[in-house]
Image (cartoon, rainbow, N blue to C red; front, side, top):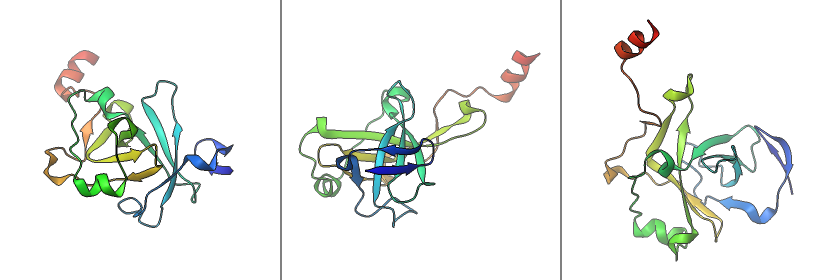
Length: 152
């Protein structure tokens, strides 16, 4: 099938790659079909592209690349909704908020994107009890006084 994308124009994809988000994403409840596309060659950054709205695409990342100690405990209800049977069928991603400069980009670790790559189902549960927040810097931040000394 042909898919119009925000970042790559029109591309050809196998319709079996379309991920179904039964309830959509928070604030995008009507968007239930997405495709996971590479954004870089390093398997760290991806695009979660709407299959229905060409201008709707989210930059997501492998959170374990930036936060090796990140842990996600999925509620049983999420496991059931996504038909998760084996851990190796699951992909976990963090939605990014891109900033200028890029080193100020943040990741939402409180509401990860959970994909059952075998069943092609996805969900973005909000894990309020996780201790994580919606904005975690991808890169360590220096305080402004340190940055000014380096520039001097």
